[in-house]
Image (cartoon, rainbow, N blue to C red; front, side):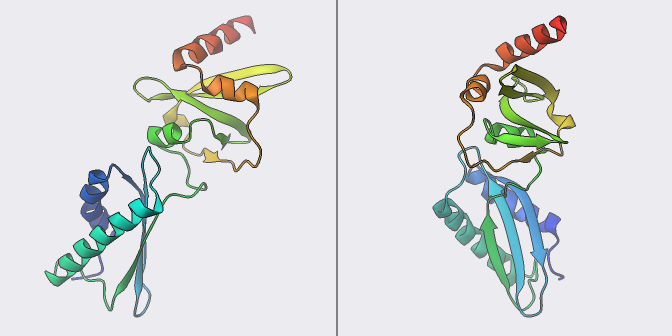
Length: 183
C-alpha cells in the first residue's frame, strides 16, 4: 500500500471533522525520508481552539494508526500529524469563508472591501466600504469572488463600516439598488 493521497486522507478525516462541527479547508502532505508530514487545516463557524484541535488530532492519530495497522494506508517509516486552522492567506472561495470573515477587510482584485452579510441561500455577499465621501455597497455572487483574501488590520475598523456590516442583507441590497438608480 502506497502513501495515502490527499483524497484518501480527506475521506478518512471528513467524518471526524464533521463530528466536531468542522470543515476541512486544506490537506497537505510532505513525504520526507524517515518522517512524513500530514498537515490538515480545519475551521468552523466558532473557530476551533487549540484544545479543539488537540482533541481532533488525537482521534485522527488513532484512526490513521489503526488504518495503517490494517494495511489500508502506509505512512512509511512514520509521520507527523499537524492540525491547524487556515491562515489569512487562504483565498475565500466558499460561502462559509465569507460568513466566517464577516466584518473583516478583504482584498478583491485591487480594491479593499469589508465583508458584510450573505443572503439567505449564501449565494451572494454584501461588500461595503465607507469614507468621507459616503458609503459604497456591492452585492456580488460568492462564485465571482474566489480570489478574495483577508487583509490584516492593526486598527479598529471605521465606525461607519462597522455599522454597514451589521445591517441586514436585505437593507444593504436595497441601498445598493437605490444607489445605482441615482447614478
